[in-house]
Length: 216
Image 1 (cartoon, rainbow, N blue to C red):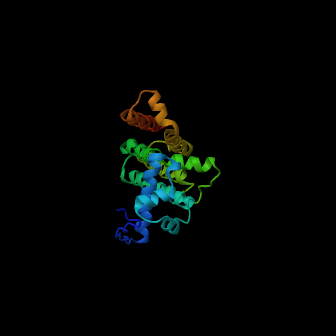
Image 2 (cartoon, rainbow, N blue to C red):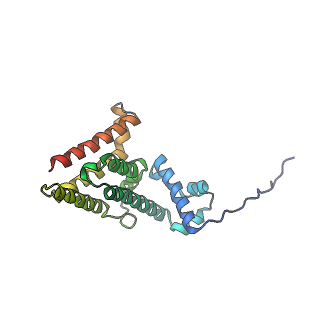
């Protein structure tokens, strides 16, 4: 005998604070972004991942666009904190761990899919100004330049050109965006596996490190 109306499971809604709910939603959106790209950010799927209703996501972010902007903003803030903390804790420019800085940039922009999402927003005419600090590269370049000037003074060297520092920041961001969009395909064509990709990033970090040294 088949029941026409099977009994509903006794499911209890988990009460979460607004902050925790937002974090879980963003975590789920980030996982789908990294795995599937911008098209993977579907509110119904994310709601199912988190175990909440679709309207609950709208309550926290108003729309898919709002969720996208919040996701970019969070990733940008995390990237900023990581890089500035690295610059702050290193006492000498020679001690600056270029691999750490480059690794953080590529991890945030490429591995987590943020650069693909930003590119998609820009190419489709969507503004990202409200969701991410448009001055992030400028701010990081400014902090890096201050550190370079401090060490130049400490070692009685000429002050570095601020434009040179900005170009370093721009080159790094451009490389991370390129890696996010076509890097995996290029690596595959070149016969590089994941370890090969990491070796490229280390090589790129060394290239910038040597440039900074030569700039003195």
